[in-house]
Each structure stands twice: as C-alpha cells, then as structure tokens.
Length: 48
Image (tube, rainbow, N blue to C red):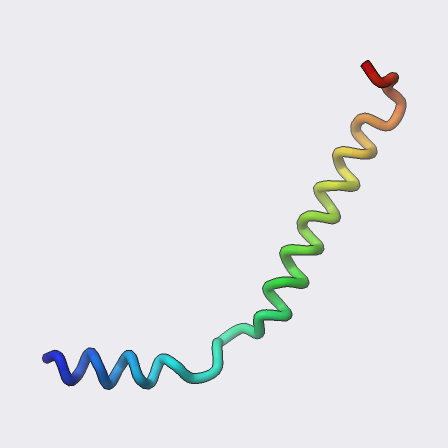
C-alpha cells in the first residue's frame, strides 16, 4: 500500500496539466476586467 502511494507521488512530479503562464494570464485578465468594471461604474462620481 505505501509503495503504491510513493509510486503515484513520484509519477505526479511530471509536467503540470496546464501551464503556469496560462493560469497567470487568466488571472491577470480577470483582474483587468474587474478593474475596468470598477472604473466604469464609478466613472462620473465626485471624490468624497
């Protein structure tokens, strides 16, 4: 049982299924969209 877990853990060290650059790009795109939404929502308001 323990040797099976160790073998599976050793095989899991291979390349990730999704590139870290893809994850970073998606996160950046989501944050930029949220930033644009906040800026457009409060665009015509005076500062308090």
